[in-house]
Image: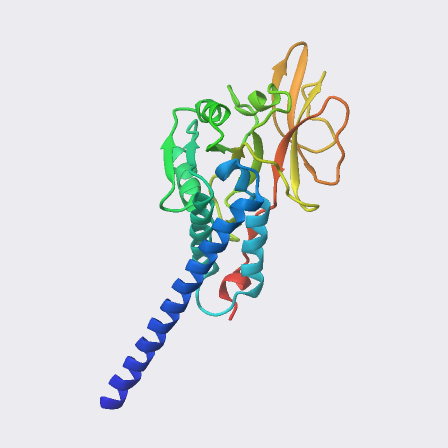
Length: 263
């Protein structure tokens, strides 16, 4: 009994030491983030938002992860750290569009932006998008576009003639292999920098109801005498005449059973 008690006490001391070391590293990280502000344009959180880099950070965590701790837990911890670091560079809030699956889209936004980020639920995706247009410190999380929508939000981005805001991320960043749930897009006043593996989105006007062959069609609306299509293409595909770039996103990280169970 005495030996067991001493062993248990020793393990608890080790945990306390690790907790102190984690906290100290978090303090150091926060101090570096505040210094970063001097190297960036004075655009607050919108200027600091870099979803492609955030995806790279999580990809590095997944590549080196091992042991019994589920990666979903590690991903959640890092999302909290990244969101808190973003807030150190300027205030921001999230407008969640709620045309459909409001609870699911809200949960995606909460997981991505952490427990301390201010969020509000809007009655529609277009209302949330309007909030971003009017205030650069607001980011919108909007349902993934789909075929047959009565009033899709994405044509409003196309109508702005390249002034922004832009689609900059797809949520969730990390998906379990058997995930069945909603997906959403993040819209913000920041540049899209998804890299060579990114997916790009564009609005393409055509005379035909069927989607153009350049990429995967996500939705279409009537526009004048023709149609406006939302397409998804690889980053390597160059813009063509008439295309209206809307941004894009880094491909999400998809976990396999092996990735979750790796030791």
